Image 1 (cartoon, rainbow, N blue to C red):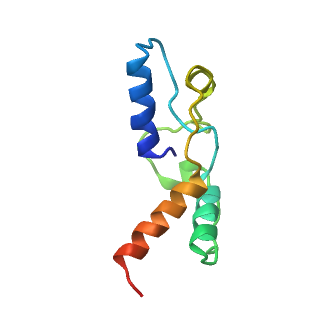
Image 2 (cartoon, one colour):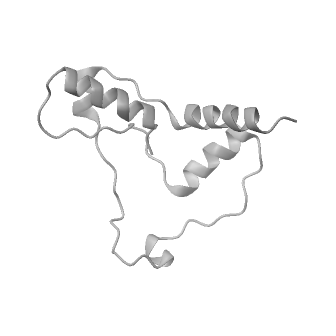
Image 3 (cartoon, rainbow, N blue to C red):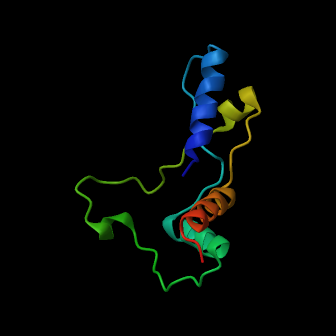
Length: 104
C-alpha cells in the first residue's frame, strides 16, 4: 500500500523531470494483510483480533494471484530522493481524521 498523496507528489516530480521509462511509485515497506492490520491496530491502540493469514486462493478470487506482487521503488527513489509516508504514519493520519469526525 502507498499513500495517495505520495503517488501524486511522485508523479509530479517525474513529470517535472520529464522522466521516461518504468518507475515503481510505491513505498519500500512490504506488508501482508495481517502485517498491515497489526500496524493499524497498534496505531489505533486496539487489540489485534484473532486473524489467520491464508493464501489468496482461499478467498476464491476469479483470477489467479501472484504470491508476491511487490514493486521495487529503488530507481524512483535514487532519481528523486523521495521519502514515502510510512504505513504507520498513514494509519496515524487516518486516526486523526476519524477522531475529528467522531468527537468523544
